[in-house]
Length: 562
Image (cartoon, rainbow, N blue to C red; front, side, top):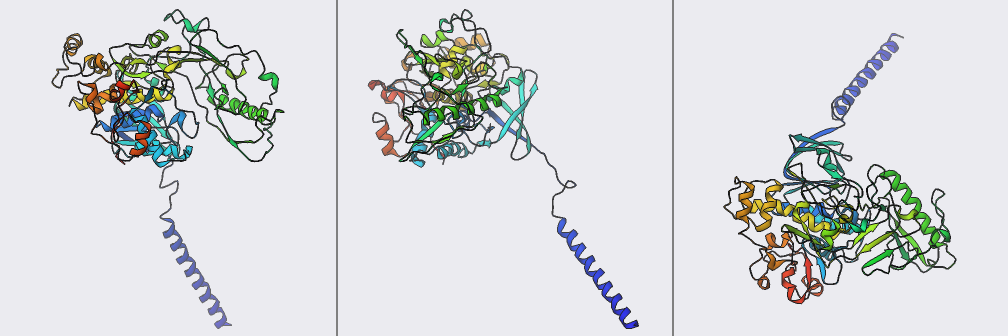
């Protein structure tokens, strides 16, 4: 009995010892775990750069790359997981710019498009996103922050000292300090700085804009769109829209659609047929706020889009019998929201007269394409297009704030009226504006000056900047002297943007201009087929093709660092 008791006690002691050892081992293993006691949920990070670009659409990408290639450190803040904005795989809006078969936007936009041809021969949208991505991450001077939204600004007097941003994936709050801040968001988030802006339509008589008619003086804008992509199939598949979608009939599309009888004016309507259609007219939101009401607009567009496809697919005339719905957008593409106010506000009359400004930095050429705010829910014209000159100049004075000294902007939010924006808003034009805006900053670095306010840069653009100029001069005296130094005068008018001049070094004789900055990653054979009049191995410049009247708006291609 005693022996049995000793055995039980010994077994109990052994079990206790083993349990203790196990607990110790467990605690030791747990020391490497993160818990509420030894870690944080939200992280904080401080960054600093010469140029901070908000918005990673086409304008933002071109601005960031241009600034980086001119020696500036850049932080590019993009609130989506991909770059490209309206052109990305999330939205899939086509890139358009100046109309006419003798016009094409060159510069960084063309570099990106050529890179896409090289690495994405089947033209897959998801790979197209990476053409933008590759262009940005190959620049060592750029810090890219995807999934990051600007939330606030920190001011130093009337200047922006920093922006506060939030990364939804990394649970990280950023404080991003900079010298120059460039808003390419389209929605103008940096107006948190107190920058002056406009949202809506001006009265016709404010700028004598006849195309506005009696519809101005309100907060209405052009609407947003969700697009459809169809796929041709060998067999027919039925389609039923979700219960929450609209269910349309012929009555929703059959109404009077008169054509314009005015030369140079075109009326556009809904087009519920599959051929040559990207469904831009699935549009809504112009009568409310395209920023504040974005979620409501998204849902309404989904209801419309599914209803449109159901109507087309199941129509008795069989118009979509051998088509399937391959893709439907979730993120609406925006045409218009907020416009900053700069020293000059681009108007309908500026566009129609050709935009002959002393400080032209880019060219547009899309129609004045004014969409009906009522959009899809209107039984009438979806948009009215007014033919513009072959190309028109856009001045630097539309690209910087009238009251925040270190705030610049490019893209949809430049300084323009509602009517002026109806032409400049298209993406190829936005690309030129982004590249040119950042290049103006790079101008000072090339001349070995410190960063200057946009107002000072504007003075130099009228006639150029001598390397030894004293920037302490009174602006009026400075402007007088600058008029005697002209690197891109009237001899190159309608030839190229600022980008051509400073990245490629235009010489006095337009016919002798060449570039030593090549694109080694571009297929020269493809390039030669695309631009037979250009010099193979270089980005085509307008001045190389002036004799053939083949005008490339922009220019300014630079080497690829990939």
